[in-house]
Length: 162
Length: 259
Image (cartoon, rainbow over all chains, first blue to last red):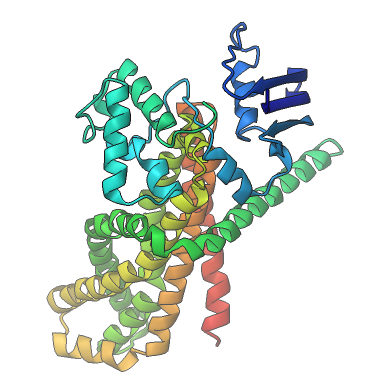
């Protein structure tokens, strides 16, 4: 199987605290992987290395054979558009409506026309059971609903990696 | 003494490094000017937030700036025995080249700079900026450039407005409390008005706008550690903006208004 994501001997420290120590692993295309561990053991840090939100101190992270740590910003953004990420706190932009949040990458990243964006947003919100919430703001949603909007946003661009 | 030298050195390095990262953010924001056409909506929104919503504040401070400068100038004219017909000249000049740009900028550093730092700081600590990054949307293009540009555009416009309101405030005090006619006061203003002074004031205002915008964004981006971290960043954004406004005011004054 093709390796989509590859960690090659990745080390990451935050000050004195060692978070990742020589992590090497691979994720194949169409494979589902679960990372389990105690609170604070570095699961989120590991995930944030995949889309370059955190850079390794040493070692390398490859996504579709591209070394994330050495990519130029523009190339990295192109790779990021193919990765959907749901944050622990959902991380919805609170100044935007639900519809604008879900359609943000479609507008700002892919520059799709408004009609097409609306259709995709409605489709993804229906998938997470939140049809008709496009005009509501994140502050009007419950914690669970925010998470589902975050999921709709993460899958809006049909990313290869989720 | 010996132990304080490394401490001073570390503080100096930290300060220079802080200024360096602010300038780096400034260059990145300017680099993203190429995205102005597709970010027009974001820029207009920010212009509205920064400009339109600051008008009541600008009106209040400008009326009193004009009023007090007129009263103080009349008091000093009386002290040195200068004729009051020059009151309009003195007040008009002071308002256009110094008082309106600097005082408006200092007040807006509190309203706009703090607002930007608090908003972006909250976005930073709640991972909203990470979310933008993860979607391949540059936070500099989406958040920093529109705010920076809106500050640079709106400060001069607000200062033009402040000039008129401050001179009106000065006129009211002069007519009702200093006892000179409004024709005498306005003739004085007209006599001293110079387009170059006006442009100097506008240049100052644009520079102050750039300072407020970039320090607000920079401190917001650096926020960490939750609500307390956002509070610290917001306070620092206002303090550093005010200090930089006063330093740049002096530098611009000695360059533009030579003796």
